[in-house]
Structure formats: C-alpha cells, structure tokens
Length: 375
Image (cartoon, rainbow, N blue to C red):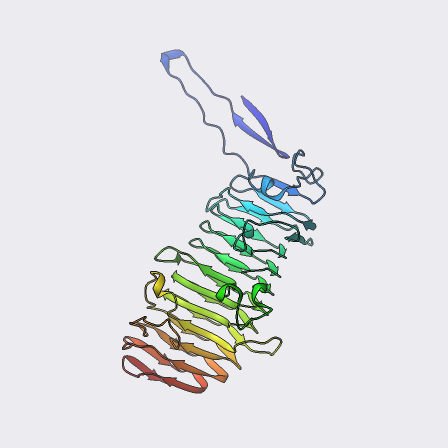
C-alpha cells in the first residue's frame, strides 16, 4: 500500500511497511528517497508561507537553511537588505542551488545592514556542494561573499561596492566562474598609497589559513576591474586553476599569486586601460606569505597569458628575511607581454624550471642557473 506526504508543492510517495507473520518472518520496505523540491523567495513574501511560487518566503537565511540536497531556491527580482548565510549541505549528485529565475535579477544590498566587523561577509556559505548563481551583491560594509564549504560554486555573480574584499573562496574544491567584480576594497579608495589598516584585500581570491592552503580551487572566466586592492589573488593553494579571466585596472596588482603548488595559470588577459590610478602590476608571483607558515611555491605552470601595458614579475618581491625564494620545477611558457617586461628574481638557486617561447618587450633574470631558456 502506498501512502503520500506533502513537501512544498510536491507529493512524495513511499511504501508502507509490510509484515508477514507466517514463519515468523518480518519484512519492511524502506521509504523511497525524497524528491528534490523547488522553493521561492520574494522581497514581498512571508516566512509563514509554504515557499511556493504563489506564496513565497521572504527571509534569505531562514529560507536557505530549510533546503535539502537537490533543492533549488529561487530568489525573485527585488532588493533584499539582509544577509544570506547558508549552512545546509548538498551532495555531489544533489547539490543545493540558490539562484535567480531566468530573466530576473535579485539584489542583495548591504545598505543599512550591520555586520559584526569589516571582515564579515554579507553572503556566506559554510555548507558543502552549494551553488549561488545569477545574483547581484552590493554595498557590503565588510566582505561581499565567502564560500568556506567544500565544492561550493559562485557563478554569474555581479559583485560591487564592498568595503573589503569581493568574493573569497576559502574551502577546498570551490569554484568562481563567470562573475563580474568591481569597486571592491573601498576602504583604500581615499588614500590607496596608504591603505587603511596597512593592507588591502582582493576583488576575487582563493585563500585558506590552514598550512597547506585550499585544494583544487578553480577561478575561471571572471572579469575583475577597477578594484582598490588586488584583482585576482590566489595564495596558499594546491592544485589551483586560474584560467580564462580578464583583469584590468586594479590598484595594487591585477593577478597576485603566492605560495602555490601544482597549480596552473593560463589563458588570462591582463591589461592597463587607464580608467583609474594603479601601480601597473600585471601578474605578480611573490613568496609573500612564507612568514605565516606557508610552504614555498613549486611545480607550477604559467602559460599562454596575454599582458598589455603591464608586466609579469616572478619573485621580485618577498618579505625581508625570507630565504629560499626561487623557481622550483616551474614552467613559464608562451606568454605575450606587450608594453611590459618579464622579470625573474629570487634569492636562491633556481632548479628544474623552464622559460620557453615567451614574447616580451623586455626580460631579465637574477640568475640563469637552474632555468632552461628557449624560444
């Protein structure tokens, strides 16, 4: 016999337990797996509603944490002056998705929203296998968005006008794809040469405080521009991929890399268009985080990137007192640098590395030992 229960707008059937007395044999059929559901949120909704298209919820965090693996939460067009904190998790085969319906643009606006400090995010995901898609996030008094679970995705996000960083990937195997990020790190806009707090954040970055850093992060096909700190930033990461991005006119540096292992940086377009004052650093590969327990960079590939009116600088900067800064099993190949230079520094012997088939207006290396140069 089948019984049914209601969940959202969906009817879920399951088999009633079956018992056979003869021979003292008891058989019970397990319930069928629950079906994924679609729920809705609107700025004019009510959390007492069932979350249907006709009777949507209103509060983002309350709604998001009702979700189960495979569920979709549609955020309808409107302005949401509230935080979004997703703690629930999906699975590899049934991720949770929070997204804009086709043709609609929901805006999460931090105007008037109090965060506990300037590093706190307006939107955060701590659950695993969660995707945020098609949202606009703006005016955060702290960070715009933080993904700290595993296998989380930020896709098609318009992130802008945040006091600190824009999008931060802090969990393993997180992905940022097809996002646009501009006018972040506004704390530095007034005096960019002397940033507030003595430092600056990043528009879109992968960062993890654990010793080995984040694993398997992907940053792909994003556009990052006019930010008052670093544009793209990957530090303390293993097996990261940074590809197909466009980064230009970011104040500190367009693409900053530090303490990477087994990572690939490829097919990025980096340039200076003069739309705001910058330090004119295109791609800067540093060893800047060694004082904080990070391992030295090794086994990386930097290939097929195009830089215009910007330079590629490898280990030309590192904190005073840091030793053993050099190329280790690194390939730098098929990069084109127009109106800039390829400069390789360091303070220790290079080994096992190749610099091949690059085109640059100028080039230099502190030492050729341990590097195979060819064209």
